[in-house]
Image (cartoon, rainbow, N blue to C red):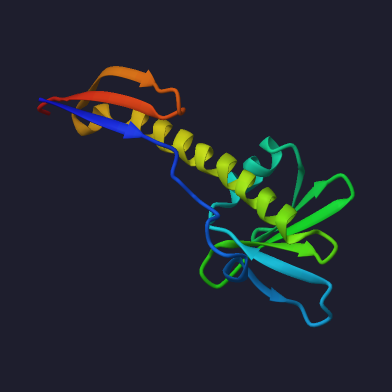
Length: 149
């Protein structure tokens, strides 16, 4: 008996309307925030850096990303997800494009983390790797044989 697992990058889309993603304008109207689905601090920081930005941890729940002259602050909300806070001078189209690209980096990091954990723990769970294939869309197909412990 064998099991095939397909690790596909989680499809995190930014298909929601701008009105839903841009949660609020701050009191003075100087900044606005964009919701993300990102929760893991270490993956957020790595995604920011892989996207080509400088990431600086402000606190365990806040990061600052710097792209040229633009600073973006990521802060955790009540649901444990990071929100990106942009200066009002950054267009909403640019902000959403940045978040969509950052989501792409983040989802591949989740895939890599899941892949590593699965490879490390499979044998102890009675799974023997038979084959591994990386697909064109960067998904990974793992075929495991179920063994009896």
